[in-house]
Amino acid sequence: MERSPIIAPSILASDFSRLGEEVRAIEGAADWVHVDVMDNHFVPNLTLGLPIVQSLRKATTIPFDVHLMITDPERWAPGYAEAGAYNVTFHAEACENPVALAKALRAAGAKAGLAIDRDTPVEPYLELLPYLDTVLIMTIKAGFGGQAFMPEMLAKVRDVRRRIAVGGLEVRVEVDGGIAADTIEQAAEAGADAFVAGTAVYGAADPAEAVRKLRALAAAKMGVA
Image (cartoon, rainbow, N blue to C red; front, top):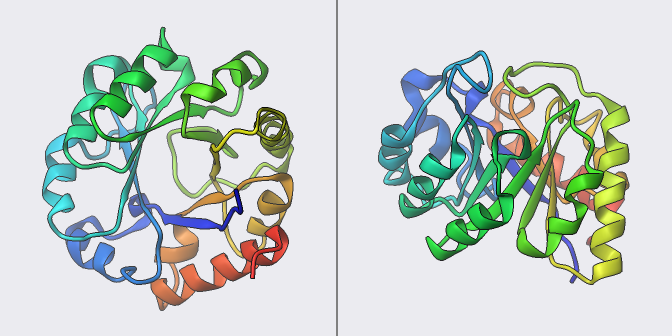
């Protein structure tokens, strides 16, 4: 398939007191809204949960890309699918049976994603690609926004992209962490086609224009008009 870049602004970098407005500010520009769910167990931080996602779903038509940085995703992930999330991604490190959970998410109406954290090798999970719609490679350590991009993580992106090509699969390769105008081209060149950007979007004077610029940079490296 011809891959076009997906830009998914992370609302973790937005003003939570104006969450509905912040999401509407990127309508018409962003492809997905990236929603970071942290539980203060799997990662040290605590963010938002299912009730807020359910409410926010009513505020915008942009597809939700939910990233679950939580323990026991088998218990909680299907609820986000049922709440209308387009894509629900859970961490390999937190899940005993990724294939079963991926099937449950698809059955609940969502795409299924598997996240690989900074210190986790990707090789053991390459055989699971036929059961997944998205592989999220963390280019930072999961759990905190505002960290510096780690280019050495792009080796994992290349490994996943090669396996997708060999298998003729249709799987998105997403990157999350430090994605901005000065790093998105490296990620795109390595084989990523979905890009989570937080501060690069919500720290800009015009978030929608920031999204458009990021997409153009990625598209140029991907050879997409």
